Image 1: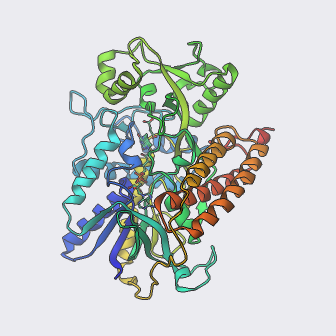
Image 2 (image 1 turned 60 degrees about the vertical axis):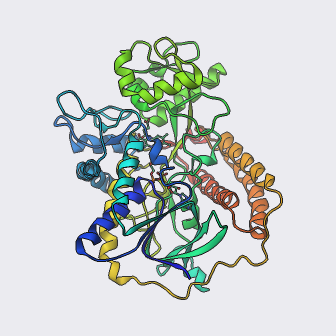
Image 3 (image 1 turned 180 degrees about the horizontal axis):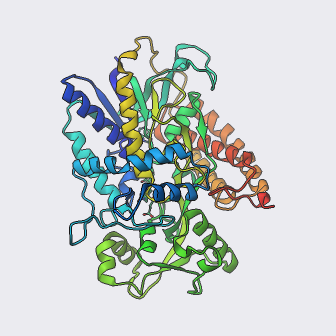
Length: 527
Ligand code: FAD
Ligand code: SIN
């Protein structure tokens, strides 16, 4: 028998959990019994959300204004952001952040009881609420404890969504721009039993996070394999802005370590200064905003300094800052530097390198998180709402997730009565497949994929590099598809399939863009 839900949510980060919580509260208040299923491919808190350091942006201080936050977001996005969406997100921010506080999220306060607002690159004012340097872990904790209060929500840990169920599975041919495609839930692998079940739902949400694992250097945890984007694309969903990959300028330089530990941008907001391998400042040669210029500019400047000197990293210097205050604000960063690399931040510079950090594009959605497929929503990092344009402003992504989680909630309760569960969805068919004997092939293809993306589709691109990337990717695609078709479904094979598809979307979008905007910089576009 298939599992049946009113709402199925794929992902237990800030996007999925904030939506689930809102639904549960709403129906509890109405006294209506419904079933909400949240699936997550490992344990519930293993998400990008948990690793967020800097904080969540929102106009909070009386000196700040919505207009300034809107302008900062537009400037960071190189004016490719959708202004209407930017206005929605910025203006709804205080109410949504207050809800996080009401769920029990702690943000640091000053001695007078006001919130201690931090500043990050591209922000013209202090507006980042944070909990030390572990804000994401605190938000995830609060949301999970709120979720636990609601019996209507069932969390399925170690369940892996393989494919969305759409009209295609009823034997119909659906094209990408057809208006009548519908989603009926997902095929989901129980990773403990190896069995694929139907998880049927009236409404489905993809909240699967980012794509970082496609690159060799990334701040993203291992779950970030772009599954939701690839699944939706395979189901004929539309993706947008996939060329805009954000590289965080300052991941800790720790060769061979994946994911890379992050040195938060808030460290520069606190007074940390970027220096090159010779210990000289260099940002004055690139941007008047110096170490706090938007990320695309800082990452390119670092890339250029590393290329000029042949070095593997640059530094952040915090030796001049008040140590006691620093450690109070950044206990996790200070401890990590000391324990893992023996760096004493009172006298040593911190070695840093840019690393893939965030996917600005994703599944195209409207102002309520709706995709082009009926009854399918996408929210959080996997979605492209139009907020980020060509480059995301720091600390705007946690914010986007709660604003769109709320908007998706409002729209999906409105259409509840117009949806129903199907009883004619075929069971998963894996006849003719076997358990693959050589998983080494998967590891090898993955390694090649990471190298292609890192070498040819990184911070600085060229037509030649992009073509090379596409040609090489095609070979990997053919090799992997053959393996996939012959094999019983498993997490590594399916994740790799998703990563190849996402890489294809990134390269295709990068090849199509003829101008340099925000995070997309192609030397052949320089006039
Ligand atoms: P996630 O939190 O990544 O959750 C994804 C969920 O989907 C997980 O539960 C995962 O298991 C599940 N999933 C994925 N695929 C499948 C599948 N096939 N089947 C089942 N489940 C699946 N942003 C800010 O605004 N401020 C910050 O300070 C900040 N700092 C950051 C620091 C780091 C180190 C990183 C990596 C990111 C940071 N970001 C920050 C970005 C931000 O954390 C993410 O964009 C945001 O948390 C994404 O939330 P999400 O709910 O969309 O996805
Ligand atoms: C950071 O703390 O530097 C990350 C902030 C973000 O990605 O928004």
